[in-house]
Length: 346
Image 1: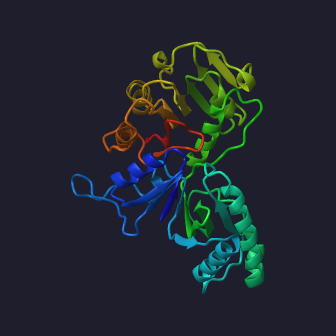
Image 2: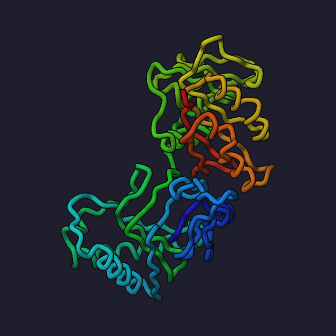
Image 3: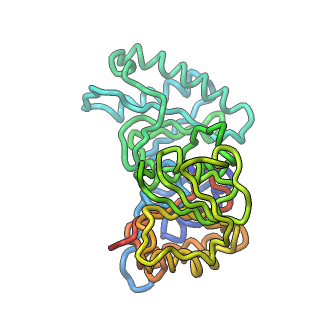
């Protein structure tokens, strides 16, 4: 099993998986390999861990039945990959578009060119063996979260790759920017909608705590939502003067909705100690039902990441108590931060 992540965070992914009882065999820039016997460890009380593979926070894509392919040349690698795929699909009938994705760590200089050459050679060989099937191949990963059938090839070096027929899509992905967005944080909330499985709708209400310079507010407003942006700092770009955004220069920690008021969405992306945010913002908003759904970004740069992730996931934590089914992820556009999405229980 090969699990990919954001490059530079493979140690955190390996630590997360090891803490869940999985046997980590090796790791490299943006990936971790698990031993075939890796399994979830029991919790302290002997019950199985509640963290399923699809909810691993630092994971991007998992190649669940990965086969190792080695070759000293482009042709040898392409031939090995074609033979492995033919063996994987034997007995199946492919009638619709299927993902065929080649990927590698960008940090290994020159590896991308090597992979592109192998990909071209692979498709040439596949056309000769299975012309109809080759025409149905698409080069993009599926958008939907969860398990998919396809063919993903992940190179870890110039002469070594892993390929899998079954993929687990965890959610993180690169998003398209908007020239009017006030900051790069806009990309984080755009990506978080994928994790949440929905996005603000026209007529819905959004409160954005710590909004400046307004990337998250702008994202919701462009979808027709009515946004209350709270921050002592100024809004910029497309958020400045937007008719769907009301900007109040107040401190987010001191704000409370009107009696009986409930926002459809709570947005929170503050450069603050994450424990302070959880205790003094997230818990009051969720426990008092001031919002129905939430997207919260928590900075872990100054705390122990693995311990903090365990706190976020804890059955006694604020999210488990007030929003069962919440999801936590280290998104493609996150840095030293975790994004949590969920829906407050009635």
